[in-house]
Length: 64
Image 1 (tube, rainbow, N blue to C red):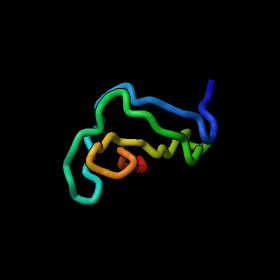
Image 2 (cartoon, helix red, strand yellow):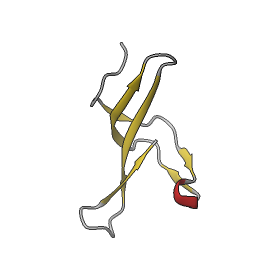
Image 3 (tube, rainbow, N blue to C red):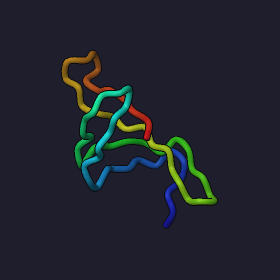
């Protein structure tokens, strides 16, 4: 079954990220929502909620 817009996903592996020129790892198990779905080729854009306890609300969000 293919994913659809606004589906909730969970990452299966750690993701090496260099957003905003900051090298870091988004950990396995991070949850997010599909915000764009493309058909050809099949691709998805996901907003991930990254735990950041120091922030108000407790999360930082990245789009991958």
